[in-house]
Amino acid sequence: MTKRAPKASRPLMRGYGLPEHDKGLLPWKWAEQQLAKSHNYWITTVRPDGRPHSMVVWGLWLANVFYFSTGRDSQKSSNLEAYPNCVVCNELAHEL
Image (cartoon, rainbow, N blue to C red):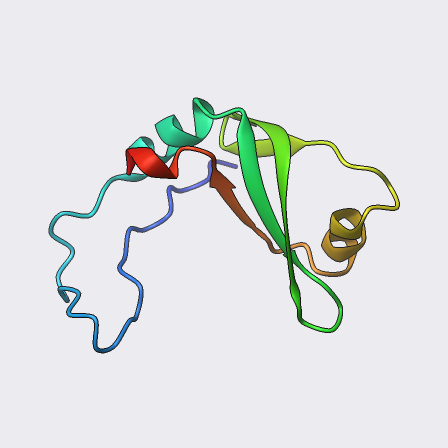
């Protein structure tokens, strides 16, 4: 099964003056390149009580998949087991 690239969109941020059109949005290919050249990533998971848990991890972005390791009893492992959705950001925010 071939995965489709995510559709670029703007966040809903009323009062911030963001344009309502898609002009100027970067393609997914750009995001993939940024993810692939990073070594350190921020991963944010959610605890059962809804509180976020963010940690820096070493990882690898390869073929549209993010790989990292963690201890079986770690907080992020427990969180991901219960709630597999998470946010992954690279270390290169200054290049945006």
